[in-house]
Image (cartoon, rainbow, N blue to C red):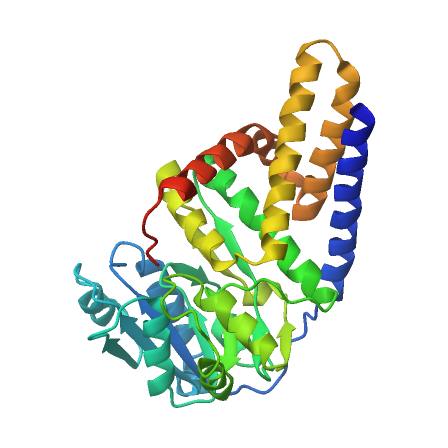
Length: 349
């Protein structure tokens, strides 16, 4: 059994190295010429979370005020039946020209994005979540990114508390997979919190998409449709293009969020990956049990696992979080499985 565990985690280690190689192949280049861009912000009851986004926009506009920077952007906020006064909060705190659209009959993030695209003046469209924030140069740099059909961009999850940082570890792994596979020419993940595409591309996908009744997955289903139409997909992984989003504060909200994520990908490869993740953690728990019985050689597969996951997030300062993640993650998986078994409805927010 020990040999099987070592082989399993050694394969995992090799996969991490391959993905690291792929990640290094992803373009980091940003052009020199700015292009006009419509930026869509779908939201629902985000009054308590949208201030950082508004502040990010305001700081960008102030920094580039003398360059006529603002004329390169059309900002559209789409209100999905909010009841907390988010629209008024935006009007009171955003120092820029913008529109607020309100959904009438339909609801959900997909409907919000579709309406935003309908009102977009420019061919280039950027979607940002209402709870993200970014650096002062982000909008200037994003306007220079080349986009043919769809461009995958980086998202970083962060938080101030230990639990938020712990909740973020899984997201760091997902970003490693996203850009690692992208560098190998395989586009299987993207994030609507920071996604660039063209209006013509989006409208073309509407003719073949059959996911309109699925509440989540606006980003992943768009990516799938773009690939089905054999249109161009690319990725740019530049630190100036990162948007940050805060991790959930409670375990319950974390599980709700992850259930939404899982609902986006129910194809066979995703199911297999999920099974491998579950198997990896079962092997970890079994190894811990063997060590407690005095079989200290089972420390070796655990060390290989920790090393591979530490390498994948590429941050020496986060080794402690990776170690804590080994203890927390099996219990998280159990909670997620139970949540998926008994959840009756999934909402986009």
